[in-house]
Image (cartoon, rainbow, N blue to C red; front, side):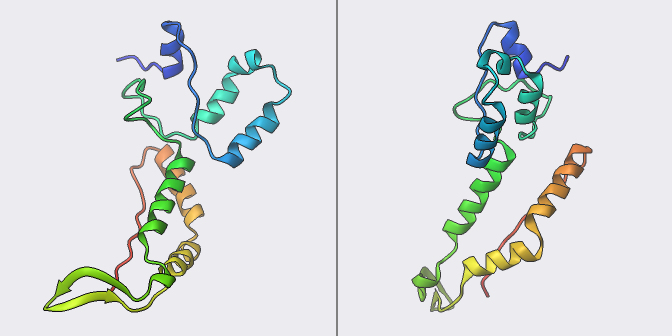
Length: 155
């Protein structure tokens, strides 16, 4: 099957371009860089669209047209989402002692102390999480299937 980009496909059927989900800082940078460029010229600027496309891990296996239920997510947005979920799932210091609706061997389980948000911050700093993810992204670009995960275990 010939490789066709979403943009090429939409051009072929006479469709319009699609907006990318980017972080606020990225939007601000893009606006600053493109403020003096006419929208019609920017729409034709393949370099501009390539800079946005690079934020998505794109597979050539299919042409992605779905924009509601399933879509590729820009890596910075996905990273922010995952970090947010990690933080909302961690018990805060002001919630201690934290009772769990669980029992083990007839004993109620509860967390009596701990600063899990600080522990997460220390861990991410210690492993240089941003650099680690950049290195993994470079390895994925080379075709290697790699990733990294993080879990907290309470003993």
